[in-house]
Amino acid sequence: MSARPDRTPLDRSFYDRPVLTVAPDLLGRTLVRRTPDGPIELRITEVEAYAGEADPGSHAYRGRTARNASMFGPPGHAYVYFIYGMWFSLNLVCGPEGHASGVLLRAGEITVGADLARKRRSSARKDTELAKGPARLATALDIDRSLDGTDLCAGPPSPLSVLAGNPVPADQVSTGPRTGVGGGGAHHPYRYWITHDPTVSPYRAHTPRRRST
DNA sequence: CAGTCGATTCACT
DNA sequence: GTGAATCGACTGA
Image (cartoon, rainbow, N blue to C red; front, side):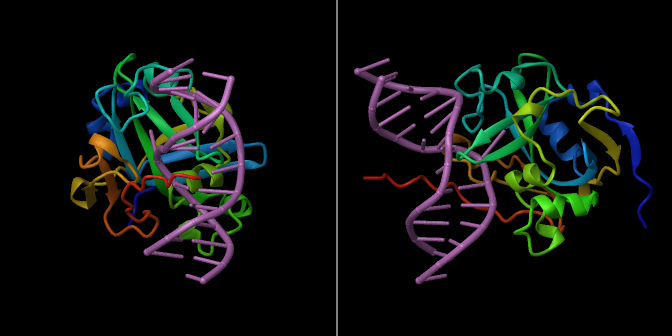
């Protein structure tokens, strides 16, 4: 039996900790996306940590740019980026301001607004696929760059909040290398997921793109 | 200022 | 399992 999820927004101090502490602590929390058509809620089941400017796998590795500016900002805000010409992904900024760490939300279980999510993810065969993968998660929740920099610690009517939810005990958390990350940052066990959860995305090694003509 | 390629997904073989 | 889609940020000149 699961207790009723805690509806209190996580406060700034939750995010103002080392990213490797914050990342596993996000599993089981509730992400709320408030759209004009109604709310969509997601139970976070899989995340990856990106550990500041020293992390070769991170967008922050080569310093601050227009795209990654949110990661260098204060904790408890969203960093949304555009990738592969068609997808968005959502990070939660953590650590002190200027530290440029973030947690990528890779997968989750839609708990509220599944009808809205299915509409946006019409190719999904099963509900467990609605938010299985970072770009699918963003698509299901109607997240794009307009939400970059959003404060996650505010309640309604903020378009994006993270609630305390039901944190997962450490013995239900698995760890492994990050998905699709190349270079020097490939081997660190910075990916965390809820063991055996059906919404967790499959692991994929980094695949360098072939040269075109 | 042109070339390169990405924290991915999907269709197809 | 393999390759296409699709575009803008970043790189190096």
